[in-house]
Image (cartoon, rainbow, N blue to C red):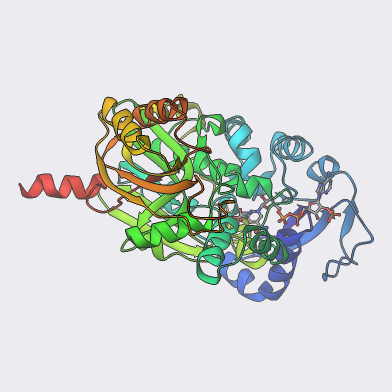
Amino acid sequence: MEPVLKVGVAGLGTVGASVLRLLDHRRDELKAACGRSIEVVAVCARDKTKDRGVDLSTVTWYDDPVALARDEDIDVFVELMGGEDDPAAAAVRAALGEKRSVVTANKALLAKHGTELARLAEASDVSLSFEAAVAGGIPVVKTMREGMLASRVDRVYGILNGTCNYILTRMERDQLDFATCLAEAQRLGYAEADPTFDIDGYDAAHKLAILTSLAFGTEIDGEAVYVEGIRSIETADLKAADELGFRIKLLGVALRTDGGIECRVHPTMVPKSSSIARIDGVLNAVAIDGDALGELILVGPGAGGDATASAVIADLADVARGNVVPPMGIAAHRLEPYPRARMRRHSGSYYIRLSVADRPGAFASIAGRMAEKGISLQSIVQRRQPVGENGRADENEPSVQPVVLVTHQTTEEDVREALAAIAADSVIASEPQVIRIERLDDTTPSARREKNDVS
Ligand code: NAP
Ligand code: HSE
């Protein structure tokens, strides 16, 4: 029997405390599976007096995560503090520099420093494992890094933030307001320490940056992701989506195009009939489109203590078994610079909600500006605002009316230019709401390939 794998854990919050609990709970099974015991021997957090519901009486306490990472008594350093820079970055560098394997759930850190840390791990011939950093408990990193080597991946997309999916689901299903749903997600331990990372799309963007590197063999470039969050989504959009046959999800999409890799996170209308539309609550889903395999969809809990701890422990089991693979699937020095496709070149259809001045010529002006850019409209729906809403005291008073446009395939650039011209014409009363539509049916690269095979 191999000697005990001695673990140092920095961060004893939602995820860290669950890791300690689950390691204890699954002690015998893990020993049987890995051929050795996995024991936490040292920990670090900010507040030594906090009750975390776990027994810390036999472990060494550190106030400084870097000192823990350098502790010669540990074999593996587990980073569960969060944050894109120090102390997480300094502690991970210290551990790797001392030839100690690292397990982390920290996607912000990896999106910013992942390529450098992967090189460091390889130079030291140790593991840098991060299953929990993408889609919580779903084993998507292992799937892409090890299970899909036979496929060339053309697209990966998914619901990558449990907090946003939870908020959108509750807003739609239970008619709750945004703030109530966010508070509930925080109470349940889904949200980041700073929830603006969740709702403004950055958390999903960090995860997408990691998936993009795994999918396309490119350096991790968190800055290259186009990001929009869900703050602007209103009940009116969720209702309109329902009537149009869509649901709204915060989607991350990385796609190989002729102009480079398109990498974007934004609220997206997806057809109700698509698999992704049925992913509700804190669940995440990742769809990977590879040439040999077709489309693979993984679904599971994307956040929460135990679900995330389950992924951390799977990584620890790999370390215990001595499985060392390159962190990004291929050697870090072979990762290619990220070829970024310009967002303005994005091609797709759009949902546009405008507050239009209720006066003669307003509609004609909007239609004219769209036509100038060659944008073809699939539908235009105008609803009369009920008297009493929008400050309108009686029906003779001038008002603004909500108008929903759905375009056929066009480009981001043309939509932005048409909307700028419409705004300059002073026929709309507020910022347009623009939501991209992904049809996700026969437009998938693998479906297109199949069609070509048949014809
Ligand atoms: P959390 O509940 O806020 O816990 C953070 C822990 O780190 C706390 O124990 C805190 O100590 C400790 N810490 C923070 N700064 C520190 C410092 N300077 N020195 C020492 N300790 C420090 O966070 P979490 O939700 O567990 O998330 C941890 C990591 O997992 C993050 O990278 C997050 O993105 C990732 N993650 C979280 C989830 C999830 O569902 N929560 C899912 C996937 C990935 P105190 O307790 O003493 O304050
Ligand atoms: N805050 C993240 C989420 C946790 O809501 O998905 C998982 O990374």
